[in-house]
Length: 157
Image 1 (cartoon, helix red, strand yellow):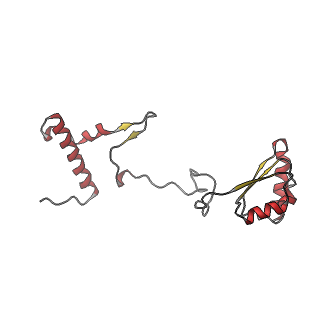
Image 2: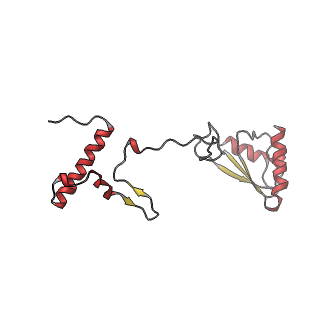
C-alpha cells in the first residue's frame, strides 16, 4: 500500500494523475501518453466568459477583500463594526406622522427611518439618536430644504 499524499502539491499531483488515468481509459491509450494538464479540458466557461475549474483547493483561494470603509473601498461605505449588523427594518413617515409614532416604531424594532414629503423634520425626529438610526429622505423638489433641516437636527446632537 502506498503512502497517502500529505501536502497540497502532492494531493494536486495525485488528482492530475487520476484525471489523466480516466482520460487514458476513455481514449484507450497508455496513461504515459496523456499529459498531466489534460484536466484543463474539464474547465467549463460560463456564457459571460468566466472559467469554472472542475476542482478548487486552497491554492485557488483569493485574498480576503478589505473591510468596508477601508482602502481600496470594495465593500461600500460602512466602516468597521458595521459589517455584521444584518438586516434592518425601515419604516416611512410623512407630514401626517407624529413624533410619538416615530419613537414607538423605534422602540418596537424599526431600525431605519424614511421621511417622505414635507414633514417637519425637527419635530418628527425629536428624541431620536441619529447616530443609532439611519434616516433616508424622499422629499422630491424639497430635498435640499429637508436635507438642511436634517443636518440641523444632526448638528444639534
